[in-house]
Image (cartoon, rainbow, N blue to C red; front, side, top):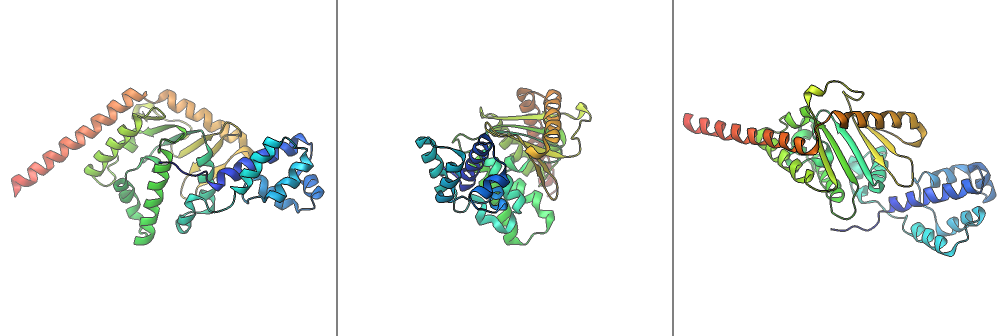
Length: 298
C-alpha cells in the first residue's frame, strides 16, 4: 500500500528550506518580514509549518534570500503546491488535539523512531482487540470510541506499510508484556503480533526485564523522533501529551542518553523474542487448562 505525500510533510520541507535560506542571507525573522511587507507572525507560522505558503509568497521569499537555482526553485514551488489541503488524520479531528496532530506530522517525516513504554504495549503496536480493551475504562461514547481505535489502526498501517517507513526501536518494560489487558486471549494474540512485527528488518522490539532496576524514565513513556535534516524531537506521553524539539535541546539530549541506558539494560532482540514467546505459550496453556476445568465442571 502506498500513500501520497502528506501536505504536512511538504510544509515541513518548506519550513526547513526557508529557515535555512533566511539564515544564509543573514536576516532575522523581523527583518525578512519587513522586507516583504508581512507581519512577523506570518513568517513565523510559515517557518514553524503551521500554515501553507502560496507560490507567489514563496517566490517573494526566495528572491529576498537570493535563491536562484532553477531546479531548487521548481522543487520548492512543487512543495508549496503540495502543502495545501488536509492531512490524513484530519478526518479524525474530533478525537485529536492540535498538539497530537502536530506530533503526527513530525512522526510521518521522521526516519527513525525510538520509544520506551513502561506500562502497556504502545499504540503503534496494538492489535484492535488490545486497543479496545485498553480504551474501554475511559467511558467514551461508542462513536468516539470507534474513531479513536480506527485512528490507531490507520496510524499503524501507515507506519508499517513497507513504503520506506522509519527504522523503529521499541523498548517495552516487562510489565507491559505481562499485563493482561483484555484477558489472556487478547494478550496472547497481542504478543503474537509483537513477534510478527519484531521479525521485520526495520523494526526492533526489545524487553526491559524487571531485574534491570530503575532508570531516568522509570515512571513514564517517551518517543524520540530522528530526522536527517533537522533537530531530533522529544515527545513525552502522558494524559495531556507534551512535545519539545529544538527549543529544549538539553532535555532532548537527556532522554537520548536515557534511551541509550535503557537499551543497554534491555534484552537483545533474540532474547526478547524468546521471552515474549514464552509468555505467549504460557497464556495459551493456561487458557486451555481453564477451558478444560470449565468443561469438567459442566
